Image 1 (cartoon, rainbow, N blue to C red):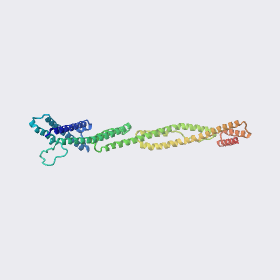
Image 2: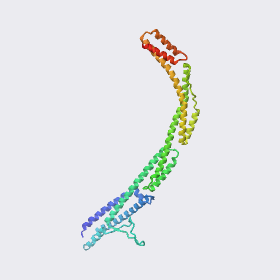
Image 3: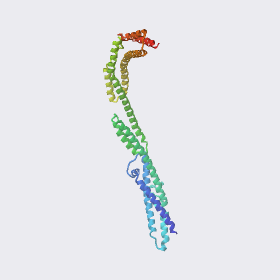
Image 4: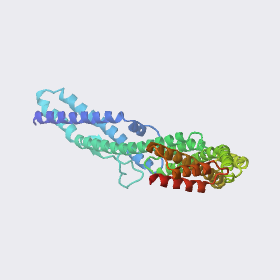
Length: 377
């Protein structure tokens, strides 16, 4: 028997064992792997998969230890060569360690064949090469379950962070207090069964958050409408005062004017205060209906005052316009140097109408148009 092939094989198995050991070291640094190695409880769909992974891990370590022992024995024999006449027996012993089934599968994945239930099952034995292949296979299966768990844990973390951000933005909105505890409970349940259908837990929370967000947005919008309505309501006294001044001037100038409607806002103010109180109680539905009616009542109050103010202001504006056009007519005539008797008489007609009290606006405008026509001749 030649020693060189045995040396090469022993070296190759030791190298493969070292690689397997490095893989196990890498596993040991993973948080999820530590959870699998601990007594952490899993439930639901996750439990049988984790149980299988734990069995695979135990099997992997058990076989790894046995392989290490076998190769250690083989190396120890190789390092202690016997006397020449015992050399063949020595090499056969090394060869047996490397080629014969020497590694027990103490924790097989599959059940032993059915047989005598009272007899102790005999676990299968593997060669070093087959045992190393089994260790590598167990390593890959362990990595697969870890990757699945990590992906789900990340999804759970993302769901929790997203919900927490939305809850934080809601501040002290009514109904928010219970969401934090519900989120913590849902996260705990999800982490017990990360491979299960835990998404429904967060869908319930998300639905509640969305409902509160919708209510909050509705309340915010109603508050903005109330604020805008309050500003418009507060403008009524000043608007009424301005309309009354225009009215009084029109009476002095024309002898008549559009009548100014009452501008008292007591009833509207009390109504709006009631709506504000209901909004503070988060009764957005009732406030929305009430605010719509209040706004209609506000416009019914403001509209006539604004119409009165506009009508009277427009009449006074026409007087200012007549004065401006009359001044422009004088300037044009002065630039020519002479004025006919007819033109002078028409100036007096316009000025007389403009100075009349009450002032006839239509008659004065007609006289001005006649004056402007004479000037253009």
